[in-house]
Length: 101
Image (cartoon, rainbow, N blue to C red; front, side, top):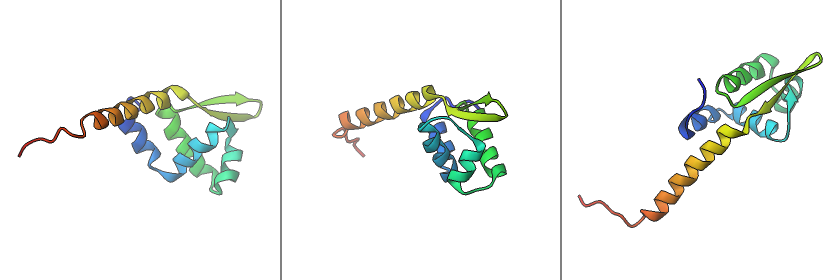
């Protein structure tokens, strides 16, 4: 499943651990051992969340020696932010457009 819309992104990031992984990776690439330490959870748990994020096209795995580093792919976040901004602008513009019952 590759993220194609803001609702898909929001649904995926509704999981607190995935949201934390995204926050950590926003500061720069990290390997699984960093994420396990930062999150205080198990390696299999982190790996499962990273798999979901990779399959959604939000995170890219990059081998570096014996380790694999993960980094965010910014474009899906930019697209979702644009969609959410558009919704906010439409809501602002139509705030007085009450439908009659």
